[in-house]
Length: 114
Length: 113
Image (cartoon, rainbow over the protein chains, first blue to last red):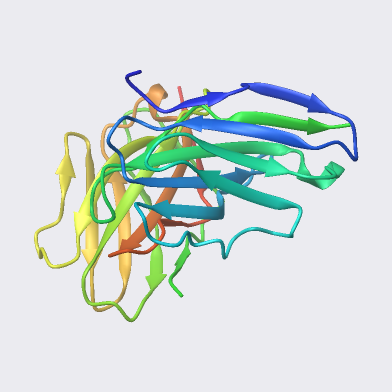
């Protein structure tokens, strides 16, 4: 595709369930980011993948959160035992490299935990 | 760790006027990049303008320009001849080599007809 694709666009889940959010970056982009954005708030960094380097997981808020990336392609963000405070928009972005180039964002997944 | 601060949570301005959004940052790096991103109500993040720290000349993109003060670690965005379509959240962001892209908390800008 032409841009960063995220699925699903919306997800409603019950408290305590696990969810998986998917991000398809732009082909050839080596860098991939996940951010969380609560309603009306800024972007909270979660995790950063860069090529074959160890990911920067410093933003993951708890051990309920994990993310994987297969090579330089798809990434999955998993939230286990969801809580109501996990409700937010989860944004994925990719970039051609680790330096100065623009990060391209997907439309996000709106997660609602009920 | 790098930090980015946007001290203006909300701003509003009349259509066709000029508005300046502030951003400061803290880093020990000497070479880095700064960005302004726009997030309209559609939620799609869009790059507005970028500045390379080793370039003294301020970046400009049509009605958008920056005032980059490296010593003061300040990076403000000026929007000239503001338009209704400029209504959005604006985020300042910082990136050093091999590090994550760090965002400020954002400024909600409303253009009043």
